[in-house]
Image (cartoon, rainbow, N blue to C red; front, side, top):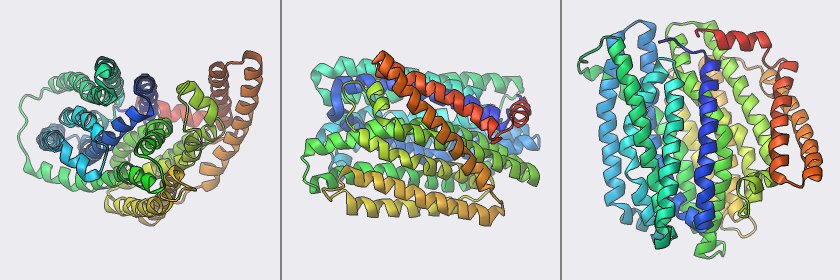
Amino acid sequence: MRKQSLMKASIILGISGILTRFLGLFFRWPLIMLIGDEGIGYYQMSYPLYMFFIAIASGVPVAISKMISEKNAINDLNGTFEVVKESAMLMMIIGTGTTLSLFFFAKPIISFLKWDAKAYYSLIGISFAPVMISFMTIFRGFFQGLQNMTPSAISQIIEQMGRVVFGVGLAVFLLPKGIEYSAGGAAFGATAGAVIGSSYLYSKYRKIKKSYGIKKVKSNPEVLNNILKIAIPISLGTTVGSIMNLIDSILVPQKLLQAGFTNTQSTVLYAQLTGKASVIVNVPLTLSMAICTSLIPIIAENFILKKQNELENKIDASMKMAAVIAIPCMFGLFFLTEPIMKFIFPGRFEGIEILKYLSLSIPFIIITQTTTSILQGTGNYIRPVINLLTGCVVKVILTCMLVPMAVFNIYGAVIASVGAYVVTSILNLITMKLMLKVKLNLYQIIIKPAYASTIMMLIVLMSYNIIYRNTISNGISCLISIFLGMIVYMILVVVFKIFKIEEIRDRFRRRM
């Protein structure tokens, strides 16, 4: 199987991620229209627990991709499939255990976290997903380790399509019973999507295994030990990161009550933060995660083969790609917040200011993600965990201090999120400099993309106002001005020589 370059792999996963998020809007939009902010609040209360499991399990596919990439580099074919077998046993235990825990302890969990009792149906609906997600992550890790991101990208799209069709279908079907039942049906969509995505990946895996002539794979406890050594610190780091979202689900509704809001008002504000603003902010983060997913096996291969120059080039390229994504996305969401919210959630666009200020976190989240992947790829697992944990402490302190204050209320949670990622990203950069002795060209990585983003944003704002005056259509004005901004920005990236045309061509063609 042919390997894909960092840029090509990132583009494949990035396009898949954008399509997945776009499909996600077809999931989120009808839900908001059907059950409103209150119903979304019930759905969102259960979602962080699901993402917490994803975080716990996330270290395994990363470990798989890293180990397979290393074994591929030294042509150890049998070792590649031993990694898959041992990780499958591990994920079966984790996934099944999580599903049973969420299903049988749903009511005690809700009682302990002091959630609204109506969130029970959402938690039950989403409880079946972990066992299926477990198997899907194994095969994604396998293909990512082979540095072929196409199967993972296709599976993401298939998974999301299944989630939209079944989730929205069940939400509509159960709506007559009440919005809490409808939210539970929507939550079950994650399970349906995982079943379909897993089936596709397994069929592709079987074909690859057959083409290599592999019939029986022996058990290897040493491989399992190595998986755990890599996966545990990575999972801890991701878990700490997901705890930031879990902190919001636990603390924010409670602290809003202390600020003087009613239970329903707290649920609505929480939904605007996590069900609207965070969903939109997550769209550019999909692109950065594509870089990170592609980066780890490539960094690991260069690191184990001691190709220092190639390693430094990959780090430089990944940091530039991260900045090229982060800065214009922050500018776009900050200055076009109202048009974007009205376009995506027509008639239910409350929470505009929440999105505007939450967009400031985008560069810091993307820097955190990218530097964490670089450190993990080079075997530095623990330090990013400590840095993320420090960010979590900052978030908890700021949330507890600011959200109960009526003057800040929900915006206290936004400030806490931005502050947490500012601290984490700075600590990661310091760690990377000390551990890897890498010098970053800040002018090339940050200043040039900032120049290009500023010019792009001015053109977007002018074009939006001109088009809106002539069409009186927010949707048309929004789409055309954003598309124009993308074209202008791509041209400016070349004009400012952030990436040269020859460099893009070489990076895209390499190892095709």
